[in-house]
Image 1 (cartoon, rainbow, N blue to C red):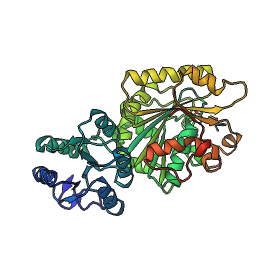
Image 2 (cartoon, helix red, strand yellow):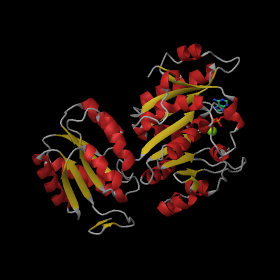
Image 3 (cartoon, protein in one colour):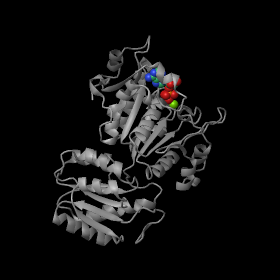
Image 4 (tube, rainbow, N blue to C red):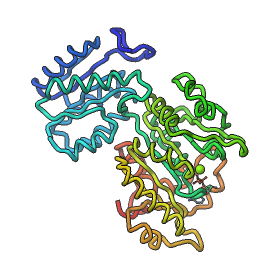
Length: 397
Ligand SMILES: Nc1ncnc2c1ncn2[C@@H]1O[C@H](COP(=O)(O)OP(=O)(O)O)[C@@H](O)[C@H]1O
Ligand SMILES: [Mg+2]
């Protein structure tokens, strides 16, 4: 709830609304907007999104941020950088100079609450900001800048969990991003196994008793894997499976997304309906396959499905275990999926060997790290410390 002192329950919030805009006319409109919203302490600064990034990197995040991308060459990458320095629960509204529907779509995919090109019109701005602020307390909050990534191995055993765990680990421990990993496969508990932590029964409890889902419950349920990595995972009886309801999963995701910059959900392939819902809300969707005819067919089927539901995120295809003896060659697999760009991860005995050591393979296998480097650039908007170089095993984009 917005008060003059800040947001109830939040200790590091000083200001409710902050804007960085480059021109006096926009500043005047934003001031009027803040006035009409009646939201307590607000600030309007002269500057663009770069100034917003600098300010938020060193200070607390407001509840509502308006950032100006006029004159910025690479607005999408700057918005991603902003997302990294900003509290995930902050609603971000972007203003800019371009009336461009493609740019608008790309911006909205990043979890931004709204975009207006200049001259800014007061009434729609007030309405959009009010809606974003109202979402603060709802069960299904409005867009949040905390990134959602849905990962699914198109068949069991192809390496979906391996990709999810290694991506989450690298983002959190090497790139320092606040990350939540959710493993929805409660029958295998593989993510907990790969991270060498003890699964709990609380994810099951959350799925079966959605009325219990709130910040405190999920905070307690999450396993602290490393300072910046939390895991929601379980290992349940094989004879008493948990049915994950898509509505309940979305409720859990909406909650954790308010509090973590990166939210990675590993979905077992049998939970197709849940994956569909998650994919529709994700900025990045990752389909993992192994080099077999049936995996290629499933990957094609999932791509078609994602297209048919209009999932707005970037779909990344990963061919894992490339080079496995007796399997399809890379070229055969790529032909089978219609020549679409695909990231390759080699079959590597090191990945299996240390799979339960608690030190995910990405710290030991340079090949895996190189393969996933472009994913990290996409997700964080920043080059990885160890760029892929010429050896990157990426076909296409
Ligand atoms: N590139 C790889 N090379 C060798 N083994 C791998 C590779 N990727 C995954 N594995 C192994 O394959 C098995 C299944 O992987 P997992 O990630 O659990 O699959 P999924 O979640 O899709 O069922 C695990 O033992 C894992 O260590
Ligand atoms: Mg799995």
